Length: 67
Image 1 (spheres, rainbow, N blue to C red):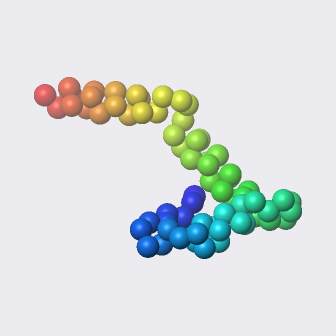
Image 2 (image 1 turned 30 degrees about the vertical axis):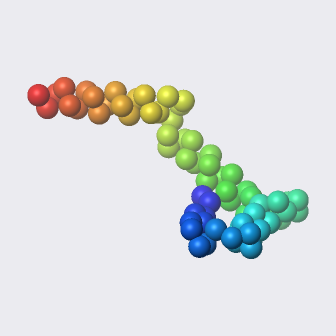
């Protein structure tokens, strides 16, 4: 969804390069919409709030069943 700028790749120029397309106000600009669509898909995949608790419970249940 967003580029990872690590260590030597994290420069002011890199931040500007990645952020500017997201700040475009033109409706035809797809960068921001593409990112927002990706976040929407991610939220759908993760489900309702509490995904961490559900995942932990599922893992715990599997451990109990394995005993």
